[in-house]
Length: 120
Image (tube, rainbow, N blue to C red; front, side, top):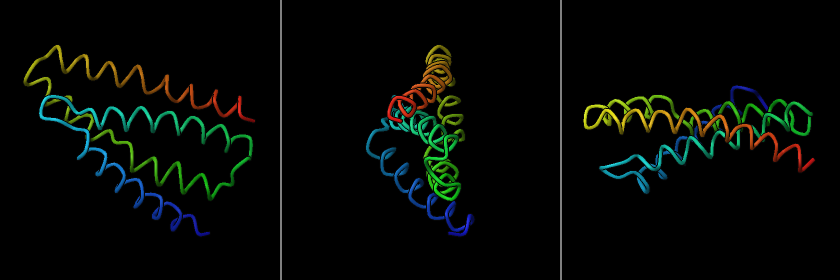
């Protein structure tokens, strides 16, 4: 499969999933959907990168799922905008939201890597 096509198909799927989950979970008071998406996406990225590093999945599958799907599923821009909005309402809430994302998501990627290692 062409790498560009793989990224495009994955991006299409990830963007639709992100939109649907954000619409379903986000509230006026807290962007639960974005937080859940970023945590889950981090776990999946860790798992897939471990599989890719051990050549359990091909480069094209990595492009489809990692670059395309997870790249469009997770989002730094929505996280940044939501953090700014929270900061304007409550500086403490904005700081806590940013810290949760910045701490939990890398832990999620690490856990995903470890899950993949354990599975193989």
